[in-house]
Image (tube, rainbow, N blue to C red; front, top):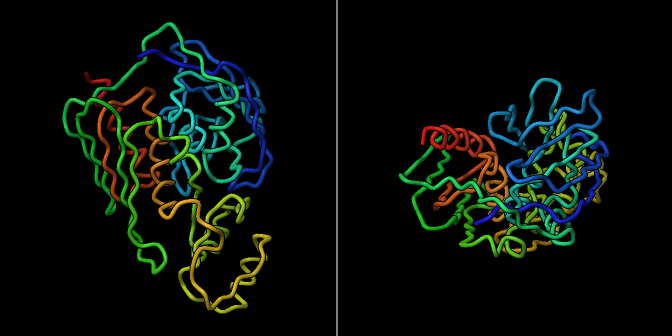
Length: 299
């Protein structure tokens, strides 16, 4: 198996999910052995670091990488797209502190990768081959990794919700990533919106870049106020459900799988093994990735 990079450069621009600031990201081909590197062109010296679990500094509603002044939020969708499309080496230049959220999925990134083209390089891909069972448990969540002859991922999610309870999603080969996983959008519950806004998060969130779930009745006036704060149309407060149409019946579970692929790409190489994740999230994903890095470096 050889390493791969982009055949051509592409650019994507849009607002950040949490900051609402307009950001432009330029994805460029990179030499074999470079890995995925993120550069802040708006900072003095244009600091640039590889996307690795070592730099994870926060995981609240997204994965944040930082090292001193260098900080980039919500990296998981772009990283997932590159990993899902088999890109080992890429230089990403950003003029802001957060990846653009676009439509809340990895699909715009995947479409741009396909249009730019994928180039095989004259170097073998670095693959972490799982030789023994590895697992991590954290706050009711669990990730297990088993030896296998390829990479496959199973994800199970469960919430105390009458709208979204138990869901399952899986991928047996990354050949299916673009069609089956990349289009799945990030999601949140209406009951989470107010506290998230009070924390200074999701300032750029709307029904165009997130799947919003209304699963707990509230007064119409309160729901109207939240809709207004996000610049959205109001919704009948007596009807529970999704506030925008689903792309898949299990779209939330597919998006959790998408996030997991992006977070585990912070290992810095490909993985050969079977992953089974129960109630995954950015915190446990990146903690497990740090465990894998220790395991890999010890081999």
